[in-house]
View 1 (spheres, one colour):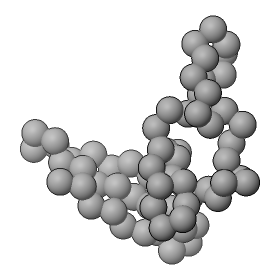
View 2 (tube, one colour; view 1 turned 90 degrees about the horizontal axis):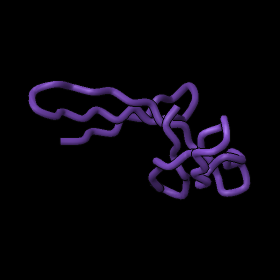
View 3 (tube, rainbow, N blue to C red; view 1 turned 90 degrees about the vertical axis):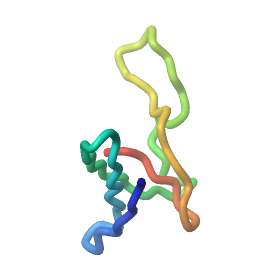
View 4 (cartoon, rainbow, N blue to C red; view 1 turned 120 degrees about the vertical axis):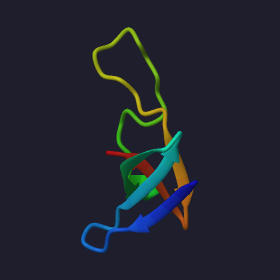
Length: 66
């Protein structure tokens, strides 16, 4: 089960996910379309910089894992 909680200080979301009795917490930072990082969506394994390949959209923002 996934639970989303909003952190008021920086508008990020903490996702709580339970898998096999183990609870995982991940923090996701919101971006608008114009603010997305340069490496968003590009997955190139030949370069040293790794692209962002995990995100989700929620209430008009694109959330990227910190």
